[in-house]
Amino acid sequence: MKRCSLASALPALALALAGCGGSKPTAAAKPPSQVFAEIDGNAILEHTKTLSSDTFEGRAPGSKGEDFTVAYIVDQFRKVGLKPGNPDGTFVQKVPLIGITPDPNVTLTFKKGGREEKLKFKDDFVAWTKHVAESAELVDSQLVFVGYGVQAPQYSWDDYKGTDLKGKTIVMLVGDPPVPDPADPTQLDPKVFGGRAMTYYGRWTYKYEIGAKMGAAGVLIVHETEPAGYPFAVVQNKVNEQFDLMAPDKNMSRAAIEGWLSLDQARKLFALAGQDFSALKKQAATRAFRPVPFGVTASITVQNTLRTVNSRNVVGLLQGSDRRLKEEYVVYTAHWDHLGVGAGLKGDRIYHGAQDNATGIGGLIELARAYGQLSPPPKRSVLFLAVTAEEQGLLGSEYYAVTPLYRLAKTLAVINMDSLNVHGKTRDITIVGLGNSDLDDYARQVAAEQGRVIKPDPEPEKGSYYRSDHFPFAKQGVPALASGAGIDYEGKPADYGRKIRAEYIANIYHQPADTVRPDWDMSGAVQDLQFYGLIGYRVSMADKYPEWKAGSEFKSVREEQLKAAR
Ligand SMILES: [Zn+2]
Image 1: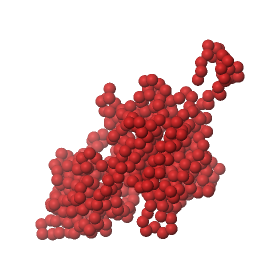
Image 2: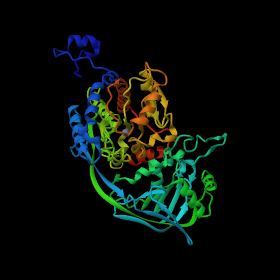
Image 3: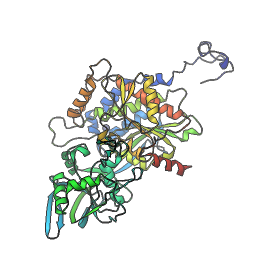
Image 4: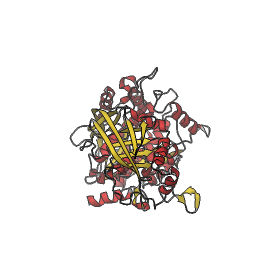
């Protein structure tokens, strides 16, 4: 904005009419809420149509579809005025991935004395190695049951009790330890492991990570449908090629063998060890639990087919306007990848991924365009990060979070967009993991200004907070906001939101049917982008960093990170 000596004496309108010292009158600046409200739903729709078209081949990492997608996003970021987000002067961050296909002709053998049990791959168990190597094996590795395999100092919980597990194969239960509420033993204690909500300690990714930390050679998780949140059939899909990050140590610090046992086979294993599954499971839900050596050994050899893929995160930067604060960042994320092209599917073989997550990328581009028009512009820098390989296990966001382009101690917040609302405006908006951080207070304020209410995740036991791209940032300490569409739609019957959600999960989600539909109404996406835009903008202008709330599992990580940076 131009300044002139009379400015403070004149009301803004008179100033605009009269001009200023003969210079051309400038249009009165719009408030940020209006700039974000004018995000163009049609533009998002056009981006979505392009990205989900046949040409983009379902946007699989490492495919021709990736080349088209990355080129498109870079081009759009340029057009809306973003600068290259990588300090090396480019719009991309290279993400080295490894594709691992395990050979299905593999047997897992349990032995005790003269007795032997041979388990059948896929029917009885699945196992793989993430070692970047031709093969990996367990040779007569001692099996030890470690309960839920959790080490959580904030709940005074340690399932390991200092037991030496080097070279051993540990067997653990999926989910959080279910600790009854002392006030009402029919309910879970809300003060321990989130009560009904799943914490990260319940996720299978945590189980393999802690197993590796303990030096175990093998980690086997006992599958149970309810605490896992999905049936064994989902686990059995892991027999196809899996992508992972190529760590500098070629993933050799991970356990050699990772896998799942079916519940039936787990019961048989416990019986072979002379143990009772139900009794040990009960003990495992207490702090007094100690690891139980089985006196049984495990042997398996896994052969891998390997290929390397150089995938890319796309990153655009809007530099902050404050000389000092521009070295600090607010990050928006959305994943660009989807499932590619399916083999053996009849009819349409392309997984278009229109809603998941071409809409999020369209939203990211439009949000960046709106940010460029803000007055006053954000004091801190804003990073727009389109990540790869979310569908393969949050790999692009994980790579950024462990190899950040800008220090995480200077990164105030992450706001993630995954699958925008395409069914019109809502009176509510869902926050996943509500109560985690100060970002929820920003969210509540902005929602109220929109005439909306914040609602918690209706299914916290599914652990959604750990299942999209904000999570790798949270795990590294950065406060992260994840929200889903509301369910209370304006001008629609009360059960409309639940109905379309159920229809989406049953017939569209992760299927070729995820395409742009003629009945889409982008006004809800615009409403949600205004919400995300205002939250990020206010964080970029705030005089303090958002923090994790007391009791959050990420609070101590952040505090140590900020302390180390001082
Ligand atoms: Zn997604």
